[in-house]
Length: 182
Image: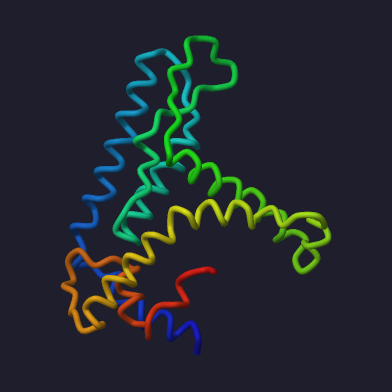
């Protein structure tokens, strides 16, 4: 029953008429390719997993939330063996990307230990800290969507074009408070 309900509220968002969404994927693919080309011109190796992770984060957050976290706008990290001048600048999105990746790494062992995972993290819940960092980026996006809904009193009929999954979910709720982790 619950699965059927969730599919019914998300199905209108995922349809073949949303061709313009491919522009999001294309733009981020172009950004990732440009980053790779720049690094290859330097003659330095690239952590392709990092580039693909950034592509995925930017594409997913823009596609689902209507605002990407711009991880591809940051300089790519150099390998630990790199001995040239380190030109990498800190970027606000580095914190989000790092926390997101660490949260995934810390979550994987929990699946192995199943309900006994708290015994492996006796002194600290390792995922909580990472989740708090990601929420610093995601919560303002969710609050903006809720505010947009509240301003229109939920009466605003969104066009199919330009509506995000978050907008759609907020419209389907009675206030959307379940979306925000406190």
